[in-house]
Length: 188
Image 1 (cartoon, helix red, strand yellow):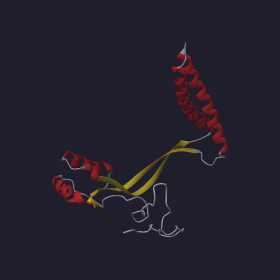
Image 2 (image 1 turned 30 degrees about the vertical axis):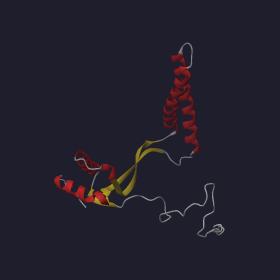
Image 3 (image 1 turned 120 degrees about the horizontal axis):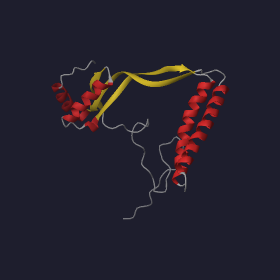
Image 4 (image 1 turned 90 degrees about the vertical axis):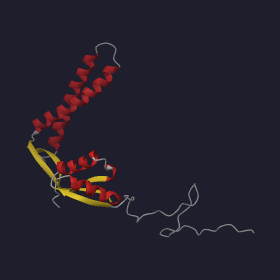
């Protein structure tokens, strides 16, 4: 019995057929088309007001030989908190720049110092000093060019309002049984 060649319809944009590639005809992508598959469905086994409480639960599960690779701590109700540390003027910007430049200069000085025959300590110190000078110049110029738009320094942190401990659905019953032995009550 002879069969003719298999015919494929030509690829069309927006169509269901995929164009051929170097390895032949690819199969259609799986999933819902909204990113990678995330694996097994997860079940929340407890919700806690702070991270150390959620961490204690996962640690307890690990101590009891639970497969913690099926566990996640999920922070919800995220809030960005920017704590203002102080005023920023040109002098302070130069000082901060000098500190950053000194670290960079120290790094470069160490690199050059490794390959120096002779006084390697002098090479490191020169790198540190030149880095601090250039850092101060760049810090002061950058602040002066900002035109007073940001005259303060700050540190940002991300905080969650609640922390949920989730496990894959296939091990949820085992996790709940273990948590029954832990005398810590979830808040949610």
